[in-house]
Image 1 (cartoon, helix red, strand yellow):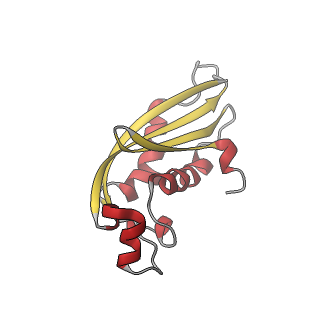
Image 2 (cartoon, rainbow, N blue to C red):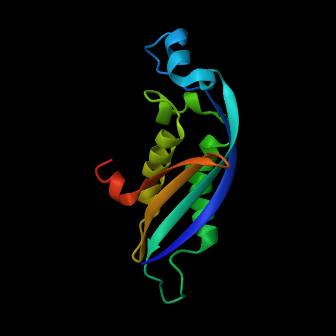
Length: 138
């Protein structure tokens, strides 16, 4: 099966905390990440499928439009803790990958392709990925 991936960048702030815990307990669990801070995120979106008659799964510019409309418009330069995606869960890279996958899935299904993976890079050497087989029923 063929896959294509497009990478995006966005800036965002967050603090890792569990709302029903006090700040001291959040500091014990999340350390310095329990305080507001920011990242220059990288986002990779992967589609898989069979090339169409033009030889592609989806025009890269169309994938860019989908991600811009359904993710970057809310996530870029945002306080992630204020987004509906993270009202009940902390905006960890793991939770972000799952939330972004769920946001994009209905917009990345075509006759010849489907969304297969979303990776969120919090730093150059730390990231989380959500893959199609893990997202069933989500």
